[in-house]
Image 1: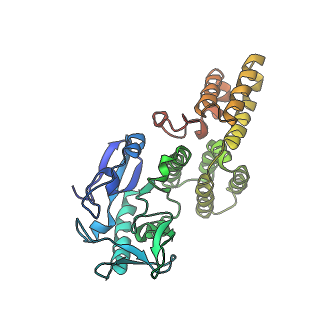
Image 2: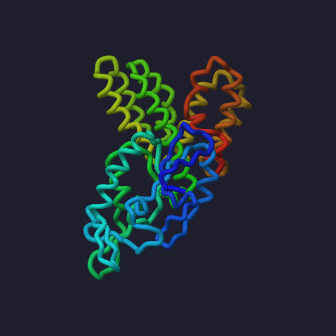
Image 3: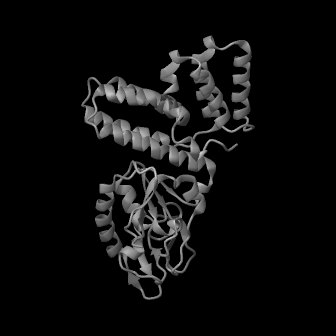
Length: 326
């Protein structure tokens, strides 16, 4: 199967680039693969995968000699130490061409293979002289992709085993998908206002200060150039969602939502809601418990329909169960 073929599973509207070996394709240097079943079973039914293997696609073959990053961490070379072959120029030239192709797919995120000299995103080994390797590099293809698509949600498969990092990444992917939907339809100022309003609590869960800053940007939407404003908004919006939320921040959002329900709840319902939020804050319950209880009360009171429509309450398909961990 060609590394350029598209694997489709489930929801086609969400498109994620991925290192081919993580899908089980036998493209590793030794002819093997590192299929990530946790990743594929958690996310796979809801996305369309766009697989890429830089080393195979530049013609290195399977199997092939090892390569490594050598030199300065901020501008390393890609070297095969056994033969001495320098693949730096070849990889960078190919990357620019491949990224143009990926641009046509309109990706919503990318999952890289950790530690790879072409795909490693964080703490990739860089060798210098005869000393030990430093872990402060980035694979050449990963570096080029991040430069070309600075707002695109990106992550390594190893880090996605952490429930909070996995939930944060997937939340960003679906938010980016919604943002791309906004900008693809020649938005007016009112569209940006509506988008921001529906994401108010999602943003607050990551950074309350940024929520205010984004709100100030939107308040100028009628006076500013809409395209410039949306570009500025998008950069800060995606940067904010990249900040890992905490139980304390989530609890703050839950209390804000509960505030809209107070006049509709009796004393027992209020007490129960307060206790559940506090138990979540103490990491005794998963986030899905207070969210479900809030949804229950919101469904009973149609006057609060705008609160019910907040993306915070339904940021991605519930089947992903990303909020079910303590």
